[in-house]
Image (cartoon, rainbow, N blue to C red; front, side, top):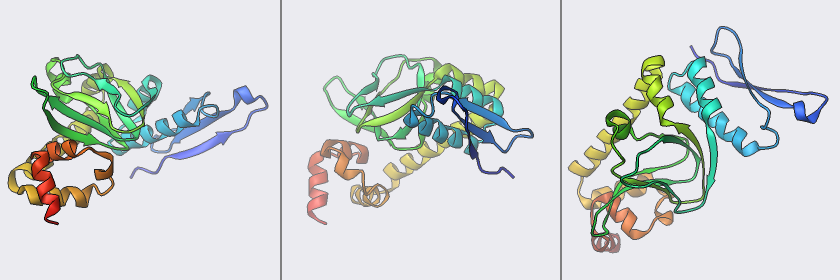
Length: 231
């Protein structure tokens, strides 16, 4: 059985030599990921700690953990920052440490169709582009001030052959999201969708515009207003 990740701190005479050690207790021998910048950049340290735990929870062993931590680039972004434009070729996946992100489809007429919301401790991977090599069909943006780690999409693709257990776990997670969203849209009435949305995401409504909530529910802002007035 996998044990929890432990954290140990080494003390050195020179401050420049101070480092945070991450001990992966699941390995047969201790594996340490040293961050020389950890003390001077606690935000990056926190994000990489969360990413390490996330990947471990999805079956990552020593090699992909080391690859991910070495390749991860920290990002601190404001609200409404575009991470990926519709029609652009994605080159990164994003681990969302803090904040909210939103993927949506835009029509030539300017209409928005919500694809998905992403919140803290989620890895955002454009699997369609990864599998087909085609540009993104949607725009990805932050909906709040956000802290992320960018991972090269080529690394995720590499895991398909070098770390198939991890790759399959990430793909299965994406598939479950799709199944849940499909069932949400097909078997529930607009009123039921709104109720479920409020139950599952009670803090999200206050951070979204009405058209974004309506788009996610598959209804118009007018219909959303009518549903709210009947509560």
